[in-house]
Image (tube, one colour):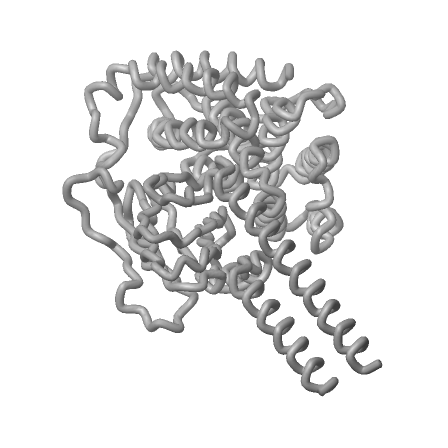
Amino acid sequence: MFLKKKSFVLKGAFFIVATMLIAACGSDNTKEESITTPVEDSVVAEAETEEITYSLPSPLQIASIFKKSGLKYKAGITSELKDPAKYTTNLSKAINLGVYSADLSYAVLNKQNQEAMTYMKLSRQLADNLGIGSVFDQGNLSKRFEKNLTNEDSLAYIIAELQMVTDMYLDENDQQQVTSIVFSGAWIESMYIASRVFEKGKDKSLNNKLAEQMTILGIIINALKAEEKKDSAITGLIADMVTVKDIYDALPSVKNNPDASDDLEKELTLTDDEVSQLTKKIEALRVKFING
Amino acid sequence: MKKAYFISLVGLLFLLGFTTIQTTDSCDKKAMTASCKKKLDQYKYDSQKFTKIIFTKKAQQLEVEVPIFIGEKYRLVFNTSGLPKNVKINIYTKDKEAKKREAIFSTKDAKADEKEFVFDAPRARKMFVDYDVPADSTNAKLTGCMIFMVGYK
């Protein structure tokens, strides 16, 4: 009787051990898969690759930089298309979430409370359509935004917090490519706003900031390229962004100052004609983005 | 006798469980994010970058380019608590292809148990964050993650 029991215990132990070993092997396989998946932040198992990756700023920071350089509020220049349902592809949803984020930041920093509320709601709708709307509920962000509508500083901190939870959410769900796409939309919209407010011959500081912003276009393009394998729709967006960079790189002021982006003391100033050339391209791309 | 079998079984299961836990990625991203956010203090959140690290037999160098703008003040907060082995962090104003560059920040003299680092950036036009990942000859498939958060004011 006891021998039978002993044999039963032994069989049980072997069964459990075997199951765990199989499970452990299985989980190792899964790990190998995740290692070889071309994810930007992962290091390939063989480790011969020495990667360069990119960190993109927030739309709020870009708006803040322009604001500090003297960018004033001009009514009616932000996106007028207020029907998020129009955007049907994930790419157009993400790009226009970026456009709305830039408009939201511009409105908040210029104390346009009702406009800010509108863009907050539109951003929420678009984020819902993109499947990431839950980030707006984290820490009661939507409600806190409404409650603090008359306090510009609080609103800016709430937007920064929204950016943080969104970054976190996208990272946890292995959707880092969305971050790069959203920022591309936000960057084009911010550049569009700044170039529309820019007054020829007057705004030297704003001119410098427009030129400075162009130095990060290369980083945006590289960040998008790093995510291209995850979403083939990004290829077209890269091509669009490259057209802007090509125009900028060919400007005489840029060609004659190849080290301008490294110089701490000297900011690059474009001629009015160069700003116009750049503005035309940005406007055309912005129309394309907004039309979905 | 029965008791001996039971103890052996529990011991074996414990051993297997422990081995599994050791090779599992112990990356608590939420806790790391929250901790970095606290250290930003008065700086406004701008962005964060998680990097998954797989230790291999060869040492690795990873680089992240961080765009910065004239006139802005930046703080970078690093948290390495999700790593099973320490990784050296260096920050440069030139990329790793540059012939000559000097680190403006380094954790090379940091204590072994230090897991969080704060860096207030000086005026610069570009920043390159490098991670020097040491080799791991144990074949233990060690993995983990680290984060840096950027704040500005």
